[in-house]
Length: 165
Image 1: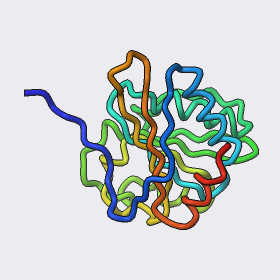
Image 2: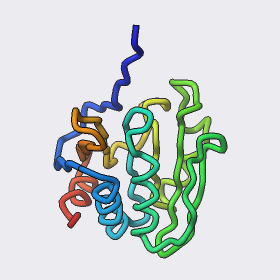
Image 3: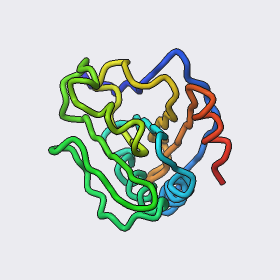
């Protein structure tokens, strides 16, 4: 029996935007737009199955923010930091056991000081801040196409999504 991926879900999320990406170029453009608008204290949760494009999206967000840092998946180190006009913390919790509290990982110290991008938020407990941008990435039936659903879970994240170009 196939193990079906289940997206991160919170009872406060509201769908704000749907973006269809027909190519890597489209995904990069979305990430650049997010990066141009990102600021300290933005928390973006990236939920999608393996190979859906989470790390590619992070690469273009970091680039769009003005950083020239080389983005690699932090799967083995869990957390990478990127300096630039906006400091960005990139977390990848794929290898974490599910149900850990963020206090056990130590990421809460970044929430007020950096923009925080979290891949695999499903792996950590529901103790994340209540106002986050949640991006759910879906494969479609069309090869190389992805559907990005952008959710808000509070006023700040709603304003952020509405401000994207």
